[in-house]
Length: 359
Length: 275
Image (cartoon, rainbow over all chains, first blue to last red; front, side, top):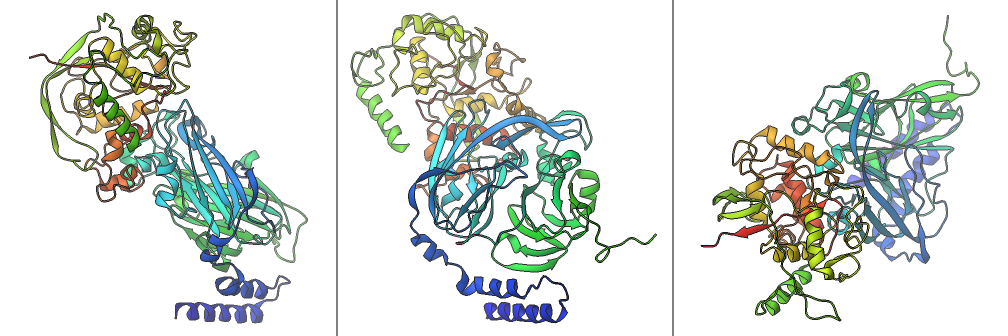
């Protein structure tokens, strides 16, 4: 019943799209292929379990934000070794404000992991010898107890190993789940793992990796120097900072993302939290496609997509005119006062056909 | 892990009828006897009392703690060196790997040369549970239990039980963010109510029954011994949800094994009161 409703909704959407569309980029194809994906296009989870990962174990290539490893393309399922290290380090949270971050691989968010359905993944989590506390990892892409949390618990200087088979395609959050979990997440211990479907996601020109997180500091927003984590503010869910990629300046100035007009852009977006959801929006652009909640359902022509804490979304768009696009959480006090702001610099020839300012 | 506990228990049972503390059955030419040393370490009397347990299936209940003596500070590099001189079987080059992993005293410059970057009066770290127990034996003491440690750890400078004071919890949480403190001499801060120093902010400390954390997890699911310490599981098995510092201590205890040697893990000794 639900599915029927879903398919008929898609049908309407397709008809609507066909009748209303006057752009060259005809979305009916994507719509129909999408409806296929929920019935016959992709393998089911049960089938995925039967996929045999061939060959020897290979080291997975991971990337620091805002970069993303190369697409899986048409490759067969394989055996991957993923190595990550939990590192506690002082870094910049805002201009003149430092924070003792707890991280995966030294960045907030941690390294981006990219694999495909059917891959056998041997996960090595090393806790840096200079860590003060134990750490572990709960990957939402794992079917198994705690997403690997208990199996990966590592004392300072130790390494824990566990294996899992990637069964469900999608974009998943991972995070530290050592008690007290909210503090580990509030200190920056989260990241994204992408499990691509067989055959891979459709190719695009540029891919980026952004995560939003909320931070709770002893001093108010703007207080200078090294700031400590504030439990009371965390419990009250009153963050002083809500930022993209661990810093108010991670996507501004020289760190702004760079794209050209006409390039198809895909952003893998996640919310680490621990508390605050995101009304993810790009000022001056419409998402042509949103993989809702990082799963297989594709919505089209979306202005703002709601991303839960511990959840994700994949958004795609193609800038048509040059200028700055502004990435925000559209709960706008956050963008103006707490840090959820970033920029995409779009370069290319003016396109008055699409946009023109009248003097 | 549980099998490790079984091994330890059976080893202790095997050895309890000998005069010296035998940690393992005779193995090669390794000397398993602990030779006594003289220690002038100051201890404080801890009066009997009770405290509210934090974690595990008894969480929230009051546990009685008998009177005992506790070392004023963690055992220091200098003190451990005097132990090594009498007990060369515990030097870095002689120790059995079964009893101490490759991290054992790795920061020392040699078997009898203390770390270059740490003070002689800094807490000795990179010590396994077995090594800590052997040291305690050599000075006629033992390791404190989790209950004893937590009981003393609840005191701030002016009261026996400060666990309900938000500023005390905050102080401990802050101490977790201080790094490399194990390189500094003990007594960095004022003593607590009992005259005990450095319960927080320097090193984690071994306890006699640390491994109990592994088997008193969620009683509904004993297969996943440690599950109670992860994710929301911890919220279901503890009473004192705001005590973030205690969460971190129990998570740490749950992450170690008896042969682990870690940069910021040391110990102090306790002693029974002889009637």
